[in-house]
Image (cartoon, rainbow, N blue to C red; front, side):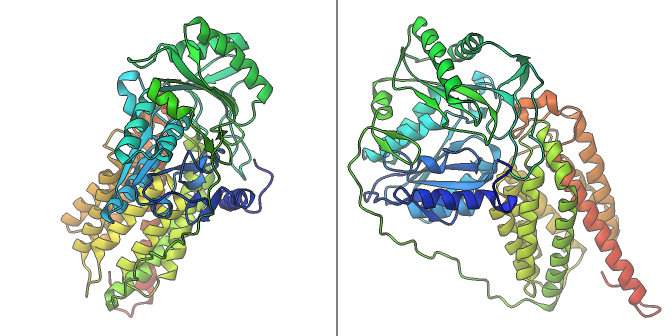
Length: 584
């Protein structure tokens, strides 16, 4: 996965374009992902799935009759942005409402949730069912906190079949919830995966060892064990899943052995044979199983076992026909080519004339965004390595993508008000970065711009309002609290120090310097914390002793902004005539 590309930053988009070119009979490209290229009957519920790229055949490979109507496709291991989800859902909507379904990851929850709010506000009834099948990521009493891994397939397949059968949105949602509750998965890794353009895998498993409880975004497992034999591995996976079965489990199950990227099919079949015997010995009948690569993680060496406990209703929809690029079952009548054109729903541009003060502050915002880009680029590799300790290793890449787009959008909006500059930058950050950090930084930058507005003049109180708006957007959207080991642990000390300095009469540049120092110090102290939010939460022990990458990047950014402001003031003071002070 590190050899065939032009620019690693464009890998996901280029791969998606090629996928569409190879599967035009199934899918059409839209901004943000793909939708079915075949006709969807008027009034049918549109199942829209999605997530980060790198998991093929999930998610775009599951678009077609009997399964999904569309897929929002993010960057490598990063959630699609809210705008991408919105546009895919709009294109897929056939008048029966939209069901969004995706793995339970913080970035996906944020972005799909924002898209759902927007769709509902426009009169497109939209619901969400997150997939929470990974038993390693939380105990059974915290089912809603579990991650979604290969169980995505069971939820998507049954929901898609229900939509194809003509059930209304209530019915499709009910079956998706029911399927998710009755699905359990557990994975193992033998070695990590490598992001396109990276020199090394996100993690390594020691020779002779196996990592238990991996995620699908390059996260290592929660514990390491001596490498088992095939029979021992089958016993381990089956016993742990059976011990976690739903309360109303019957004796008929779907069994899915899923390869994560480099385990050969011969090995998957060998393991499946041993699993099937163990399930039969436990009194279970295996119904229409799957064995192959269904939800991958680039070139990860690993696999997972998924069990779905069926009832008569679920079995009907699991067995129903489907015809997609990567998943086919039974026979479906051919569909006519889709002719519906996508409409241009671009919002009208902001034509408000900027005041002189707002335009000048907008130009300063453009310069600051360039500084933020530079510091992120400088520390991209370091942030990625820090994130890989207990996460998916994409924090540096995601921040780089986001700030590159934000800086470019801000520059393009130069000459307009600071509110417009930051709105453009925030939207671009969210759109390009995806993931949790993309949603949070994008929303926060937009909120800061809205707080600054388009005024005739600006004061320290406006700076305080912008900082409070920035922090409020992060805490309200991300729901993290102090001690959760997230960016919030650096953000709130920054906010509090900044406001305290201003209240004490300090100028903005002095308040910023003190606040940036507080943020960097607080970020370093996150090494003492165990993560309670995000992908690192299941790997809390691995994270202990290492600072949170989101807090670290926030500290680096605030420090660079403070240094830039100081250098500007110093230059202005030098250039000012004797006896004149530089303006703030």
